[in-house]
Length: 323
Ligand code: 13P
Image (cartoon, rainbow, N blue to C red; front, top):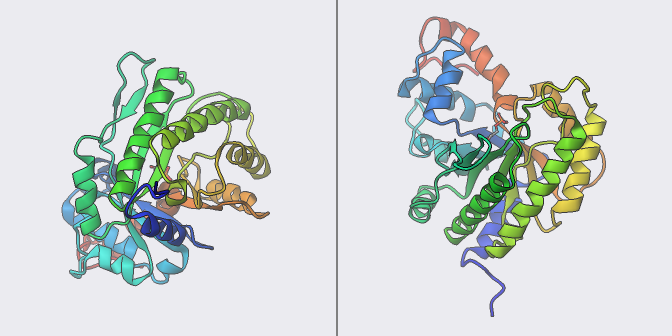
């Protein structure tokens, strides 16, 4: 009987440790073409392949990026994309010690039989897609499903989210990709922080139950949780110390210490809020590496600054990206 669930076991552990390395976190730049279009529209740009390429070139060529970023999550288009100077984006990342990752889920659709909730598609063909992504240089994967507090969450939606994540995680590990397990508990709602804590405990209990049932090796996964905060519309706000206290209690009660890294999503928090909350969680040693996997909380100012640059105003996007 082998304790190794996957022939990639050693490599998975090594990849997970590299991504969870001290002082660094993940740059989530895996916006689908539709979401990227919304970001570009916010600075008055058309959603063309050239503009997406120019923007992504800007992100990966920021000097010193590798000092702070250990992994970058890419959308499929970017895994095969080059910078405006013709270098493969995957190679630009690897040269800086940044592990390339890939979003593998196929997005959210309504969950029949639920309280207007959703489920995440993408298991069909996932094994062959994962093998192709590994060939292309990806070493970790991401699957984002969501749970809504105002809409329940129903027992059905939580079970579906947990089961989907567990199947995806097992398939990823079989194909050499470290799965990032992301059941995003959406910020929307008027509920207080105690209700978020209650729902998060339920969700993570179920996620780990099914991960274990699917023989997922915990040393070779990364988690991407939401921080435990009050709902976005709750009038009673929490300090960073309260968010840290609730979130670390949740993690200690639900996450085994063998998991190498907890990489939080920002979920619509401002850049400052997300940073202060994460900082508060790292004031004392934790059993896991506790860091970030932010999209909006890393990119918002960058996108805005780029949009206001002379190059942007002149429409010189293809050659004229700025740092
Ligand atoms: P935000 O940090 O903008 O929530 O995005 C992170 C992410 O990748 C969501 O899946």
